[in-house]
Each structure stands twice: as C-alpha cells, then as structure tokens.
Length: 268
Image (cartoon, rainbow, N blue to C red; front, side, top):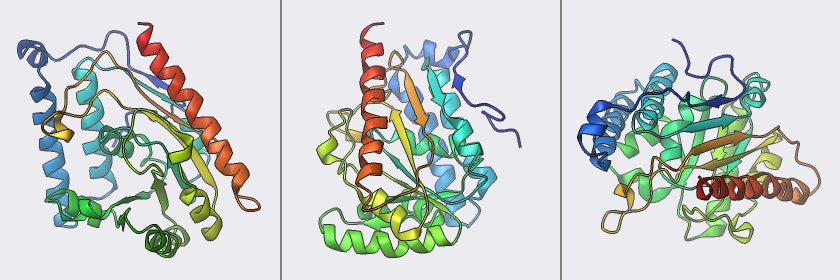
C-alpha cells in the first residue's frame, strides 16, 4: 500500500486541497466530521476484536482520519519524519504532549510506517466499546492515574517487555488533555521507561486543537478548521545519568513549538 507521507521529511496540506462539498452543504457542521470519524473508529474496533487490526489496516484507517481533517478545511503540517525513518524500526519511547483525541486517530498514518508502537492509556478506556478492542489489539498499557506508585510499576514492567520485544511506546506524561503546556505537569515517566529498557527517547510536539471539548459531551466538541494541526518529531536521545538532562530537553523541544503554533493561529 502507498503511505500518505512516503519518502517525505516534512508535509504541508496543499493549498489547493478541496473542501468536501458535503461539508459545505451541511453548513460546515461538526457532525459531518464526527459521523465519518465514528465510522472509522467503529471499523477499527471491529477489526481489533477479530484480531485483524494489522499494520496495513492501522495505517489505512488512520489515513482516513487525516483525509477527513483536510476535507473539512483543516491544514496539516508534519516535521521530522526523517528522524523516524532513521530509526530503522528499532524501539524507542516517544514522549509527547497530549492535546485532544485527534492525535490518537492520526498517529498510525504518521508513525506506523516506520515504527511499530503501542500506547500507555487510562485504564477507564479499556472498558469502552470499540475503544477497548482497539487498545487490546495494540496491547496498550493501562494505568489508573490515581495510584502513581502502582502506575509506575505497571509501566516499567509491561513497558520494558514491549520495548525489549522490539516495539516502541508512545507516552503522554500529562495527567489530562490540555491546550496549555505546563512543564510542572509533564512528568518524567517516559525518560524513566526508556532508561529502564535501555532505548532512546524521542520528543514529539503536537497541536490538535482542531477539535475542542464540548459543553455537554466532552469528546464531541466544535471543530475549528481555522486552527492548523501540527506534529513535529525530534531526534532520538540516549538517556544518561538520572535522565534529568533528557527530561529538560523534552520540555525545551515541546514548549516553544506549541507556543509558536498557537501564536501563528492568532495572527491569521
């Protein structure tokens, strides 16, 4: 199959990318986006439950989400794909900020062609229909986020097994999804996990406020095509000493990029 970003280091949505006529005819209503997104989500869960959510399906379904954003008038920008390509498939811990559910639906299109990975997720997600089937299929690591000591033990034990088995992990160290990046809320679990498993840590900054929280249903909020979507992957870093230097490097990579991207939206 052909990957959306094959052979690229960077990607920007073409200026002539057409907006869906159906999206225009519905008055650019958010439900056009969510209806299509939910179909992809359900199909992913269906395949996951039957053990058929393999690499090609992961990439193809995630690519549908990327295309949907652009059909709704959103602009996508990706930087640093060459860093993923240079890994040659070796396992790493990718550490990122967490802004919305949008990124989890896009990461297989961006990362999976180069790196096989799983997630660290909230345990409560493992009980949601379709979601649990996707996460079980990916062998995601569930954590409570209410018992830090137990969560750390779970992540270090199960995470090391995944990493030494040749797969990578994506870790969102923030306690919850947030547009604001607060360094004090960005814990060092990703660095600790990388050090324990003896693998590099890779920084990733993202901006996915294309969708925002809803007032009644948090995960079905308004969509904002005027807000560009950004992903940037940095170079891998070996963890040395107690990892404090790498933890600061992660923050120094992520924080200024988010600030710059948010400012760019304001200046449009």
